[in-house]
Length: 491
Image 1 (cartoon, rainbow, N blue to C red):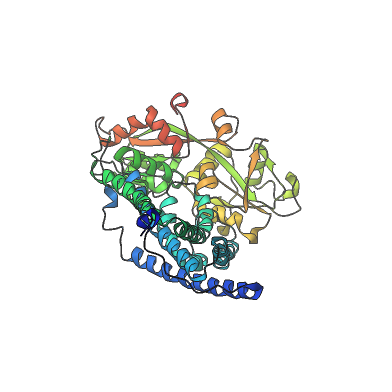
Image 2 (tube, rainbow, N blue to C red):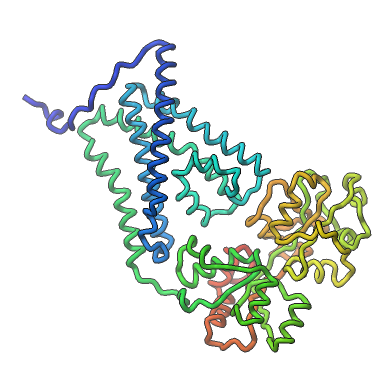
């Protein structure tokens, strides 16, 4: 005669090998299980890599998904990965018949391998904070390749400097999933009748995500512009996040897709494209005199609409004891009248003052706003840096130690291309921040313009975008893109 408990129970789980007792036995079991978990880890990584490389996600038209649908797709993948590592933990627990905590301890050696590789890559790369790119990260990506679709997706939604730490956290996830699997096995051994409840509970999560994914594919959406009617937009490097934000809000494309859609060609090239009718609207600082003369010679009249504010900042190596410079000291340094850091409160070392190439947005600001038309000393060729990122990297380089000085725009240097080896210098004792930019207390506030041609038709996509930028929704997009909106009451 069967009892009620036996009627509701699932089939008994297979018996496991007898566990060894004593310290030596436990140590032998731990070593064996650690090796076995390492094998499981790399087998599952290879399996998930095969799924990734075979384009499992590309079969769904991701450009048709909104952000919620795309998140659902990535979370379904994350759930599948968690399920596989959890199954590995269940297998280890069943094989060893040890407690779940013991199983988790056995995953620690493999888990610690990730941070060791991460730290080595971090030190080789001299601490850059804008992602996990470069050959120095190859071994880490081999180790954590299973997480690459998730990290690649998340980086579109978080500050660039935080991506590295998300990658570091990914190293701990498989061990935690394995421990959860071991705990689940113990629970099912004690509550065998709950097996189907657990299975249904696990299946409900991907089912809900699949429903959200379907809604993301099928739900009709209405936006001010479409991909087909979107104007040709160009701009400065620092305005790339804003360009992506505009594409996201005005067309509804998901954020990862905007990275493929938005292509900015630096301030000077953006002005050339606007003048040559290769761009309809550009996002940049004001034009240089050379760019104004070129537009006039081509019969193009430019319309500059101020939409946002940024700060023009000066930066030094973090080992430099100088934390603040006055407006006059900065001018004297770049005019060649001050050549040693000891003259401005620093060490007795020559100042290496780097500059940008002519007609770049930061160089134009330096010449017109900082020097105010005054003499700017000719920099040696090796001190003229192409690209804002290149200038920041040069100041951050260990070889420059404490003697380098450079400049950039606040949002670009603090978010887009942040470097641990660089610190911002206060000007007249005021540090650059969103608060000091908004209040107007920081001495060098830069204006971001939406620049169009004056003969742009009022009903054209570029004119409609310009009108939208000056609305409340546009101010919110400008703030999200890293700038302080000019329309303070609506930001």
